[in-house]
Image (cartoon, rainbow, N blue to C red):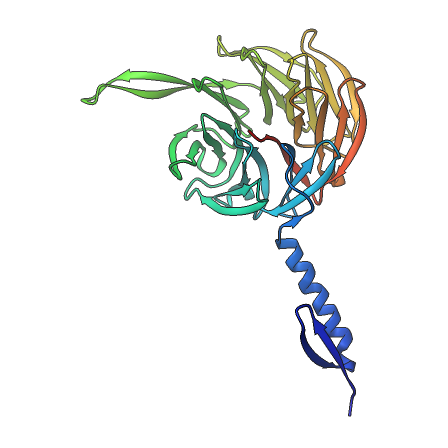
Length: 358
């Protein structure tokens, strides 16, 4: 007779297994525990009032980070292929786009206070959500697979607006603070859509709100972009050309193209004072820093093998850069223009956001 071994499970449940099968059992047990941990919320501390949010695409996780200690305080599962994240204006909720290059059609929702996943938002035919922003109490998103943008109203729990761009790979999105205009980059078309609110007088219902779209040709692979703090210019990083197109918002046209040598550019972000533009690249080891006054490159900061998402701290002291191939987020001191730290960020970190609780 083969001897057996008594095992005690937490909670007092006892059972025995054959000693000869113990190794297989232990291995299976560890696999089950690892699988459970990979899909469960891992919580170490409460969410701070100011938090950095980091997505790990291949882990399907949102990581909540204390920017003071650079420590991850919680990890929350957010579904397949999460690419971008945005926080609500009160800092209590995060929204995450499940992209899948058009295969998926949901926005994951995370309660940042309780560090828990809420019911995802099903976008239906609006497939391939990617770019996100939060404005006017609503989550605005792009839907590459539908060549469209839309908004979700959390108060009404419904998608309340959709507009087609007619462009290929409508990818990133910006909504002006006054809600009067929207900009998107359309990667495969090499364009920017400038969409402005208008009122029209037609039909028996009287005046109604409408939108006018101006399609502006920029460079090939237009993806990462940002709007200057004064709202007058849009700077677009063209990944295939390695250039930066500068658009005059009022004139709705490109006024200058910078030979910035940023091939593979992924994101472009301004510092809060508008004096610097930071550009990441998935093809190179550096973050390029351009002085907006002179429109010249002033520094190339080595961060790793390649980089994607950029988030600037609201006070302008630091920049956080997702080094996707290397599995960490680089912290850049914007006074010294040097790396001041690294945050281990799981597999393929990308989208970053800042949450301030009110």
